[in-house]
Image (tube, rainbow, N blue to C red):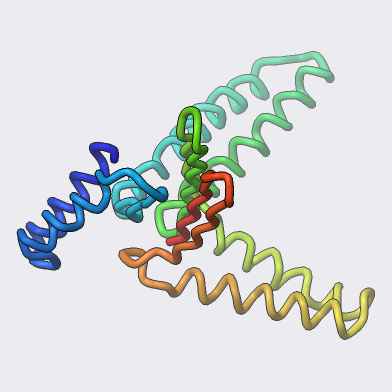
Length: 185
């Protein structure tokens, strides 16, 4: 059991969602050897990480703008414009990530270190792209592809409207003792 998991249980006690006795039993279960157990990460903690791609995009935007205004070589000008487009995309993804749901993946092998990573899912950006693609897909690919596109849009909407404090959890446990835990929220 990690310190984050202990802290999460203590936060639940502080919020009144668990009694002290329930927390003791939960901590005993989590510490006890046996099948891998996992608690959902505190999703609100990750929301502040939107600032990283946003600030990186702003810095790249300033550098690309300075480069465009000072270079005379056509190749450097092309590279500066590519950097400018990438900077605008980074700023947009960073800005939209503050409201986007996050994907948290935990791979817990039976033997070896646990692998954990988290990243924002830009569902608003994806929904916008799907809305733009809908008329084109309807015209070119036929009705079945348009139905899949509509299903994808509704799933993205449901994920975006799901309360961030209650993540959608998917747990896959292998017979060998390996586990993958996915949290969306």
